[in-house]
Image 1 (cartoon, rainbow, N blue to C red):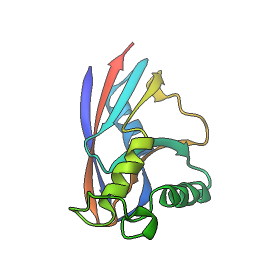
Image 2 (image 1 turned 180 degrees about the horizontal axis):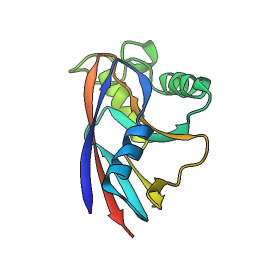
Image 3 (image 1 turned 135 degrees about the vertical axis):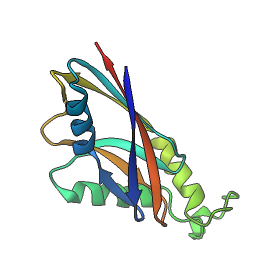
Length: 141
């Protein structure tokens, strides 16, 4: 098994694609067949495999998440009590509750078996910049 960590700098809510970085790591490993597992080390951002061809997909996804869990200072969210790190803190945790924090992607001949329009994203749910860390493990099959 081989492992690494990816550092992803964020600048507010967005989908940050890092497919190319994972692919480059697999190439550098000389990976063959197996599976790559990704796991984010934070409770206010998520991982997602999503379309990478049309940026409207990411914009619509973020708008939908904002409708589901708007900022805690929105009147519909007045029931929230966890506000220690600002009005975007608890809504970020709610968004993580419905999106994955880990992914597995099959690898064949050293290449991820993603579909033609699929990319791997870190989805940032917080307003301020962060340095996010994603652990990656490749297990040969």
